[in-house]
Image 1: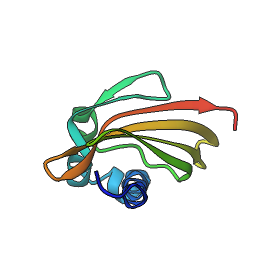
Image 2: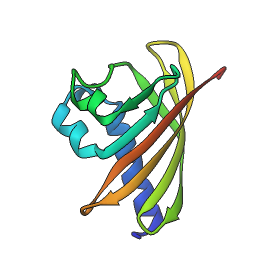
Image 3: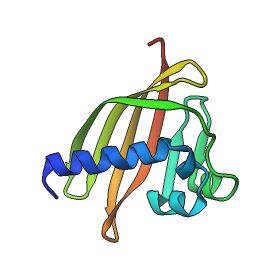
Image 4: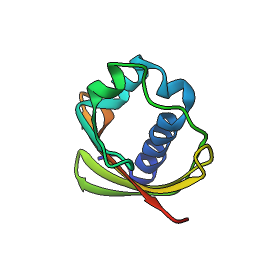
Length: 119
């Protein structure tokens, strides 16, 4: 596994990309960032799969700010990332977690979960 400080910076950049409107509507970028077997437990209570993101119009676009980013290596090629997001569009806060896998020479999101909080 790469240096933990560098890895944290890299995964933070990838998570931030996934919050950007340009990435959220770019099917090609989503296809690169999400593993083929990606799934998500959404804050809505729905379960989403990669095909739901790259098979349609992409992801919904909102103004979101990420904070408190941390990583927890689970193995040499799997990392848990946790953080908070302030969704300024919906006036909502969420706790988020993602599992990233190193697949074919790049990091891809395998799992994601968002849980709505009061702040």
